[in-house]
Length: 394
Image (cartoon, rainbow, N blue to C red):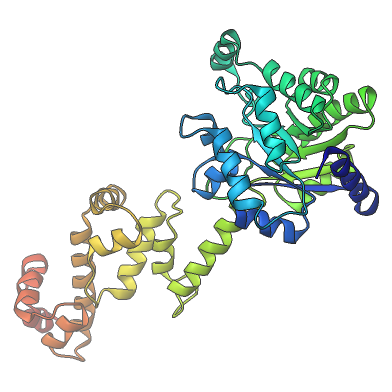
């Protein structure tokens, strides 16, 4: 799909539905599902591939692989064979020193990509590292020059921007879409813990899109996720800014995948008891606040003290090392796991012996001791009386 076709199709979507939806994908599967869901444009980004691998989108900024090679292979081998009728943009790392950009852009077009988007972008890097990159020549200027050259070659261009100056320069370079990158997407297991508030995002969007309308009213105006990862967030920005489209990365792949796979596996694992109050369920959740895992284990002991309980098995279920879980249990309760379990069983044994409704051997079995002799020795050592003498004393 060439540049004119892409622009015509996206403007038709704006006219009919009032907005454009883009999806930053990392596999053929996510591309196919995004297309079936109604995405108007797809972005093949190395960040998407890393998300599918269970890593943060920030992995794109480390030397884990060649970003451009990853995107090229993903597009040609995974996405194009199954998704052909939706424009696909190439997430291009313009700072790659090995590229002859003119030739590489022609290769991108020859392989079927409709255009490019500047990602990973230097715009998301700040501080001393950004200063060092700029001094070395790996600056945002390279991305601007690449967008300008891509336009010359009749490739559709989307520019990630984060401030007013970047916006002005990308408009001057001829970008077809100005997309405000609002930072890593919040939410889910790997989501950003720190992000700008949605109100602050709205102010930034208003500032940048006012520049777009003044400099080039025809440029398409979109936002990229960040703090906006729900329909409510998107609607808020649509209603309070001149935004024309929304692009989701983690919003459309990582977060839905995390929740659906997690909950599906949970439901199969716990088919006997899906109740949230089941302490074993809470032990398996692995999403601990302070004290939650220890509280859940204590609750589990209350309900299963009559059975064999091994700390090592509970640690495996909780995906923790036995040593770590043992130390954490002692830190929060003041006693070791073994001592806590023994004391709990002996207190239960005292209650049962006091009731006089069962024999000493039956009491031993009821509190988890199959060996009565061992039970009797433990009871006398810690209570001061044998089980029989304890009954007599009551």
